[in-house]
Image (tube, rainbow, N blue to C red; front, side):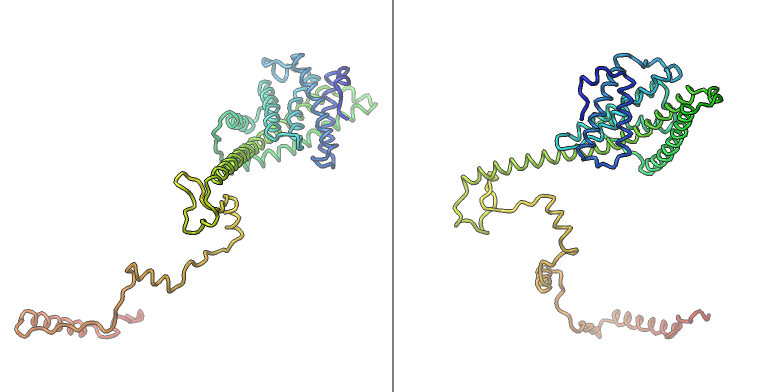
Length: 365
């Protein structure tokens, strides 16, 4: 059951934050499907708790831009995670009554606010995180998407995954230390600085949420591109459907009688109105026919038709037979006779100097 407004009035900031945090941890470990009504009810309940906590954080002015991490009280440091948790829970919303684009943009605003606050308090320290934050900010603030190296993005993603695993192990170890101190009656534990361990634990939680927030923001930007393209395609499909319906209604009024239809009639009139039925294939149907059709182009004519077409184009040489005989040399043409004689002599000299097989020595010298 969702928390009512009256039940939230008596809760403190710490209680609201703890309730929202526990619901988020519960959803991370649950076996329920994200479309399950009980799962969605838990998501909405957690959002209500964390939104109330976020409002109290803003009213109390717990964080100032002039403060650094060392200036923030340990008990207040964990409330930096409120916006990050809201971004995570908002991404889990789904259902027929939700708008995916609104969900993505709302979650992005929570994540952007969390990262901006962390940057103000010098909590984002690694060069990789700062570079990725600048790239994501540029993407969200510019309609023209910047292109990044896919190989570099893959390497950064692997590095963030390894770093996230290491931070989770650190969080588990610090949580175990805190539990041992709280459950132990040994006086030797009194000398341990519990506040430092708890502060280190909260800082590790914030570092984990910074890694997850950067990864979520990157995924949101990619999904937003697809959602916007789908919306544009849907609008174009609806607009084209309306135009076709209007044209068909207008053409029906001026369409000739059915017995006058035929292949010898034009499909469209000069005004662009259809004069006879025809099939309109969408791009999707064309692609479908290409996928499920033949893997090769089918013949459109026979071989005889093709040869006849080439013959008409003049691409086939007709004729043939014996080569024409050489014209005899006139007996009175002495220059031609001398030239023919010299040609025969040169050939005889060449044959004598180059007997048959002289050039094929098989590398024998």
